[in-house]
Image (cartoon, rainbow, N blue to C red; front, side, top):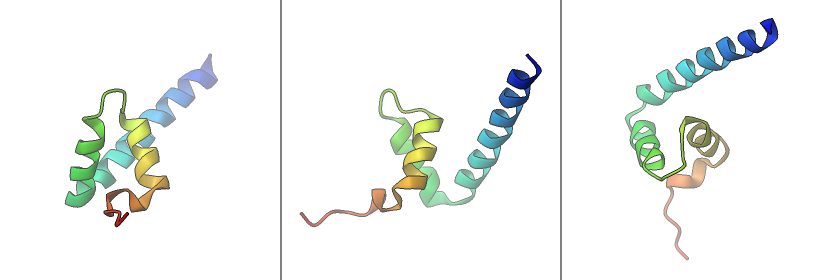
Length: 62
């Protein structure tokens, strides 16, 4: 049970740090707000999308 508690503590810490980083850049904050407005998208999905798809906010010319 101690390992689960440790993981939960680490996840809270990581979520806090990622949230602080997101709040420090107005553009990221706006994009994060837009992503979280989609039903089913929470912080985990939002952080993953922002981290893995930096082109997400770039308009497509297709």
